[in-house]
Length: 446
Image 1 (cartoon, rainbow, N blue to C red):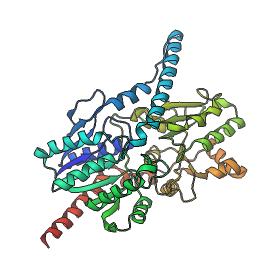
Image 2: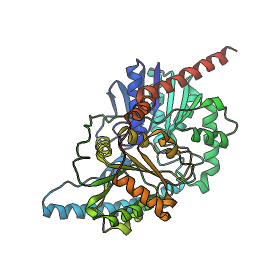
Image 3: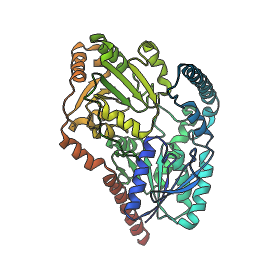
Image 4: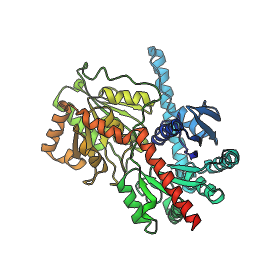
């Protein structure tokens, strides 16, 4: 089978979609399929290359990636004089970054549709047309976010006889908490566009049953059998990661959050308040809180904790996948902050469990998707944000969990691994390819 994947983020980018679809594409190759990927340009990577059997075509301007990379450059240790220069450089980058984001937020983002990757549509579609002339894919997969990839797929499906799978990592038209465009201007267009995409697609995949039900509610005309749940995937880093060695050898109690923060749906305020309480119960040197990932608009949440930054609270930013996985393994407790939407599941929860590390799950909602996901995991402590702020009994229970985290039952991890590994998840997609293909062929004969 020849499979063409349109996925804006792909190896070596550091994003949930890149991790997921890099692992799936490579697994498809191992199963004997021909796989081509069209993704965004990446700094220091060739426009066309073959990696682990996958034919990768990178297209579009890489100006956005260059700016992002420049803004997040990490300083390296050095002499005191160099350290001063580094701090000045970081400060300048931070100021410039804030200015660029402000200008973008108040100008381009107000009129750009459907999302920040909108301009990529043209180069991706041109590349897909050129590739299809000789590749002649049997199956087309488009991945969101960004939603722009589905628009490329819509144009290709209308022209070529391919079976089209729409893979939705995050919803588009009803994402009111973190909208990807100016909904005051584009709300109706968002709904019409996504409705057209869903109608033309041969199959649709989401990662949770909650998301599936939300789509069926928002688009009641959609065929229920068309949309299926393909669970989150545990993707190992491209480089080997050793087992944790410092978890038991250190006198620190290390809490680690890995992922992306958003003020509206994944806010760190309750966690930070709890950590302040923790260090008040024992010397500050006993506890460390580490953040790995993008902070986005949550930076003001950390302002009240300036006295703890770089002494007890450490912000590492976006780091290589290997480093993030190692940090999870070496933590005493991992922290998950649940979404404010019941149907979405943070992509990192599978990696949390597979690390074999106890998890503190802070839920914003009673019907938290993460709490449901962790239900079979013996090493979890669930608590709501409200209880963590206001309930002394719950506060004491969580403190005791952090100070004495439980041992993990490996049987549970092994069971989850069978559901969420690359082999199983890929087989789920292949079943969708084949099932929809058979139905289409039968319909054509009637």
